Length: 171
Image (cartoon, rainbow, N blue to C red; front, side):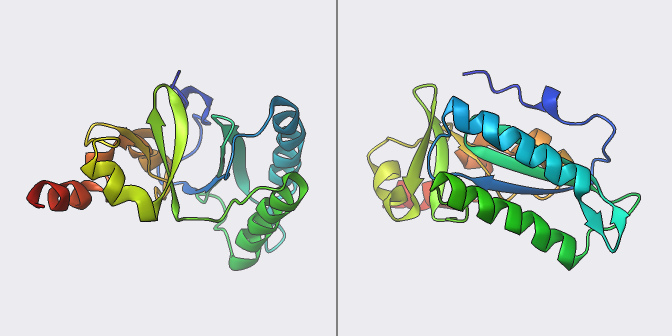
């Protein structure tokens, strides 16, 4: 699995550009991805904050993650403009019958595929060695372009999950 997503991020966006990541409950099919792309492009082209265009970017990565980014060096993103991005994601949810807001599903790379694991099963997966400290994890909590580039896909032990491994090793 090629994880080199950074090459698709806009080079002219500031490192502190705000990032929102929405993880789908399933992989989108190729035809669905081809439908989503113009939706994202149209949203970014029309994205405004108090009438001022937002320098925005949106893309579907790994067939399962929608990344939206706003470079706020020209215009800050207001609550209303953030709400419009949430409406877009809700539209995608309804149209494709997916869940894009379930933060209880964690995404890992296992056997060269993105696999979702319910948070409730995490301790069992760690205890039984399915998830190891070096297992690559999608940390959808990253908030800036710089964090997206360096910390979005990282060993689980380099994320908030590190404490889970410490607890498992004590038990």
